[in-house]
Image 1 (cartoon, each protein chain N blue to C red):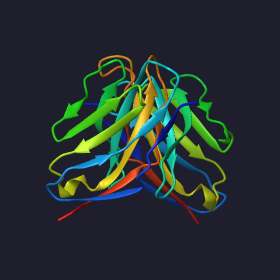
Image 2: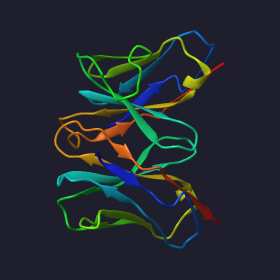
Image 3: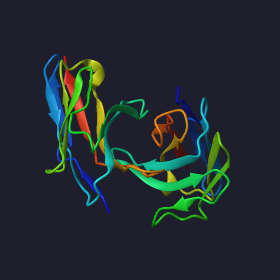
Length: 115
Length: 118
């Protein structure tokens, strides 16, 4: 079964600085998606960024970008120009492609942006 | 687009009673819905997958007689916690997925339901 590991339970960053959240995963399959979800105090899960495994180009969404290393099974999230609203739990997640597949979540990283 | 709602957002019930949680896809038809459970400061754990018009598929270790899931229409799935006990207190999140129109098979999450059993 696939696993997703986030080794940083908590992190903090100064406002306007850059922070990188780490994620590794394990799978023997070749076709899958990787995600970063944000869960603010409201607990609504918000999709931050999505990466298709077959794409070599790293996904970017405004201040958010990923470093996808398929061979190393690594999928880190970089947040640039951190804002107070970025304070939240961040979950790395994995889903096989093809049909309705469940999402497997990592244990999460609690990010605190300090003013 | 791709809005998923849950009702209620917070429910308190007495031990031994049953409580129903609704998950609705508001602007798309959801062929498949997923139910997750999240304990405080922990990750989301999948409980079951439900497909419209068929029986739900439960993950290992989830009691199907305790957590009844019904997916009667393409826009509504319900989770009923039967004979609730304090250990069932948790945050329950649903997600909905569709083949057509949106990103195929993408999951869109509801805002969650906090269940407190006293």
